[in-house]
Structures are given as C-alpha cells and as structure tokens.
Image (spheres, rainbow, N blue to C red):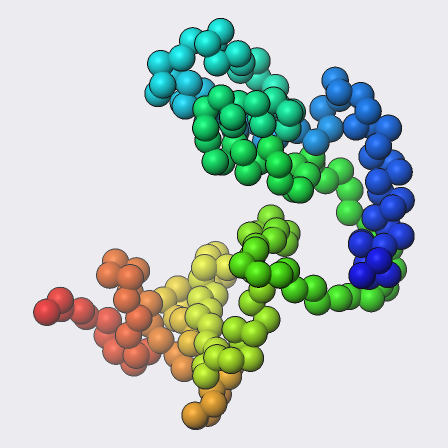
Length: 193
C-alpha cells in the first residue's frame, strides 16, 4: 500500500509541508467548516447554556478540531465528535494543476465505512454494477440545457445493462406537474386513481 498513489511518496511529501503549519496552533489550517458554529449555537440555546457555561462563543471564525472535540464532549454531540476526530481536511482547494499521467487504483474501504470522493460521501459500490441484473439511467436534456433543449419534456430511459433482455434507449415524456414519466407518444394526461 505504501507504493500506491497518495499513500506512498506523495503522502510523505505532503506531510512534510503540513507539519510546520500544524505546529502553529493559531493558524487557520485544518479548521472545521464555519457552518458548524451554527450547529453549536443551536445546541447551546436549546440547552439554555450561557456562553460562559459552554465555554465557547461564536466569533465568526472556524473552530479548531481541538475546540470541536471539547464541545462534542461538553454537549455530548455525535456530529461534533465525528467532525473533531475525522481524517477529512476541510481547507479550500487553492489550485488544481495537471501533473501528467499517473496510475489509478481502485481501493476498497474495509467493512461498512464510507469515504469522500469529490465532496460526495460514497461507499464500496463497485460490486453493485457487477451484481445488478439491470443498470438504467434517466437523461433529460432540458435539465442540463434548459435554454437549448428542443423538447423540454423529452426524457431518455437508457438501459445500459440487462441480463435478461436488450439494452438501448426508450423515449419517455416527463410530466413535471405530477412528477410522472409516460410513454413518449402519450399526450401526458394523467388521472389519479
């Protein structure tokens, strides 16, 4: 594992850059998102604690993990505890630069754990497609291109995999008022039962 992607040399180089910054406790590096302050404030008011009673006052700055951990303990809050001790770094990305072609690896997280990919919490889902009898997608051009879509209610039902039948695309008409898909040739009239 120490040879794979970010877990090897890149990891070590990144840590060398981070350690001096982390040594300065006053830095704004590795802070919990500012929105968490609102969560803490609502917990404080809900429990009728004063600022002094809680030992924390929202000063409009993102809190450190250490502070978040202390507040998690005082307020007995699972969300704060998870944020304080997670390995997610919430700092903004300043730049994305091309580094050339690199090997790509498919890692599996053990057990029932989730992980974050491009700001999306995900899980080990590789086997879902393998084991599925059918994989299908809905595509509405009007959703992605509202100004230029020739038929705003046209939806494509794309069958990408089917163990027991053909693959292909079926045209449907989307009736927004009823959140309903009907056959493309249908006039779209819907009468509830």
